[in-house]
Image 1 (spheres, helix red, strand yellow):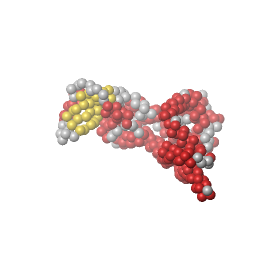
Image 2 (spheres, one colour):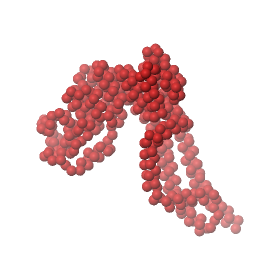
Image 3 (tube, one colour):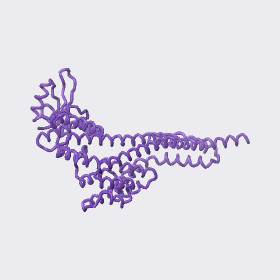
Image 4 (cartoon, one colour):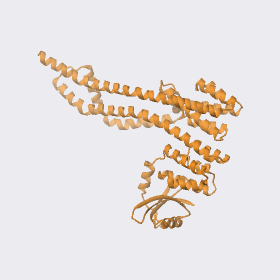
Length: 421
């Protein structure tokens, strides 16, 4: 069996596109003929759901598949897409529909073409005898380690529908948190961009004309005006350095931050930044607690679950603490002990995990920790959003006041000189 993405014309001459999982090109043409679709071209997907190349109805490979290249660049599979697909798949399996048939129904339902191709490939692999989790693991850029390990536990225990429902809940909670953070940052970023555009426009178009006027008059300029003119000369005189210089700084910075030393430095110091560091820590603890609780309740062994959550916290300092905790657990220690010794996890979190371990209710305690910290993150993000709006207004006001003062002060000085003369 192979997965083909096709383009054709229906009986009304309308262009139609889709994905079919069939046994060869002949079967593809027969299936489309039954639906009264004339095949124009098709793409066979490889094991990772990517197109091998554009092939016409004559069998010749077409050159320069720009359409597919554009799609690969522009179309992304979002966590929301994965969450909706997971919820639908859980519903179908719970209703008693076999896994292969459920995947076939999902392939027909999904709108994202890249996700459609990948799911069609997953269905083919499962239909050919591969375990569901292994078929997902091939596409690890879409289905992360947490996802396919939970699917593996659900498949092994026979509770795949329940595990998929938990996965959908988990993914949706992560999407909500991500959207809240993005929403909180949108307003300040837009305001900064507007401020930068206004200041740049003033420096390039307005200030040079005023500079010429002041130089012709030979007036003694106030310090603010001199600073503004010097900044304008720098902007207009060295503009050709901005793009290559900025690009060089960004590339060098990303390369250094991508190294072991740079990444450790960044993650260590981010946790020390006032307000932001506390927010990053709360988000990491919320993800750690929610993910570990979901994995344990789905039947994933503790050591495997601890290995997975190391990557979820997205901070190397906290990930190293979890690595030490995993090693301690392997030697018979508890989770709470290494977390307490690290001084990176709040005492309340350590205390609740300790109680959960002693009482056998670790999953429930982790869920409580996650809910508590998710609420704290919501409160902190809302407070920061409310605080950022007036701060950005004040910042823009100060910028405008500086520009106005730098331009008006020499004019007022000249006007006084003329009146006195």
